[in-house]
Length: 146
Image (cartoon, rainbow, N blue to C red):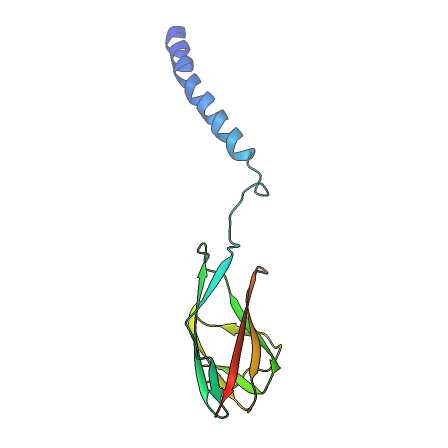
């Protein structure tokens, strides 16, 4: 009978060692040490736009945000500032953006529409930002045409 229990204990020894290693590895994991990347820089691709615009005309600006990785909770925002001439910038058929206000973007591929309200050259900048602090600045300049 003693032999049976001795064999039984020896047979369980590798399982106890395995269990101890498993518990040690799980408890030694510190969640502060886990690195899950969710902050991905991005590029913004812009299709070519005309160089000239007449007062009252509209230019379509096609943009695509291309992140270097994929994280489903990344949110993108847009803001703009006009520093030359006068015009309005809007997302599809939504109301025009107000300068320096931050607006959420609904998609990574979208179109903006710039309407000229000026007979002189017009210049403005667009910033695309994400919720991790990454940003890209785009500059646009249109010469006046009649």
